[in-house]
Length: 239
Image (cartoon, rainbow, N blue to C red; front, top):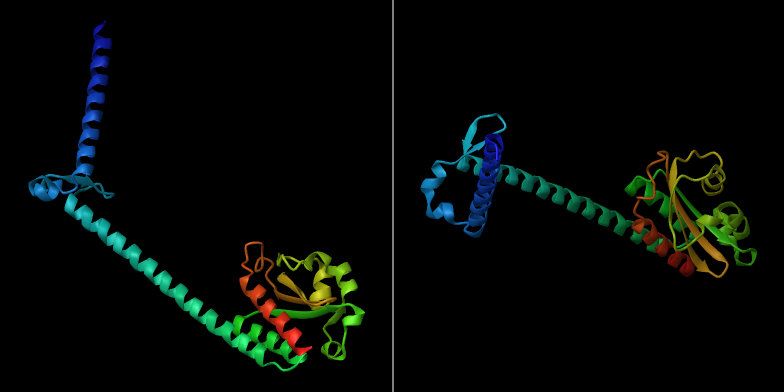
């Protein structure tokens, strides 16, 4: 073996030995976490690199780590408190809405309360509540609201939105927007859900926003589904 090869092999062996020794030390410290408590003199000789380039003691480094963890914990706690406050506010608004719907004594009153509560308590820009029925299911009170539509026409215009099992969130076609909200309304995006009230009678509830990204596939539908269930039940009771 040449001298160069011998020196290279010797260097590789030394590196492997160092790596093994480092791993052994690491394994030992992990298995004995109280080592530095039993040997405090060892801590005084330890230094760790800092981002500034200067060396800091292990104690200083630990204090810095604990301080950072404390800051992160306070931030998480603050976020949780904010979420709790938002949930409390949402619950109070939802409770007030449900009570208002239960108190409504007519179909027209139900319609007005839904629109009013959605706008004032939840900041909904536009609300549509349509009554889709077969001719034989129509009645004077529904017609008086001005929101009754023939179910056959609805199937032709917004048929794919009438699935009770699937609430739609996204951008409507112009024809769909016109049917639900009126031709004069400019709609960016909407959430639309339907419920069966009686045989041949569907309720369509929709909310809309000018922003095309406000209602999307990622939008949660728990709230609008819940309110639609209550509205369908109230319509059954009022008819």
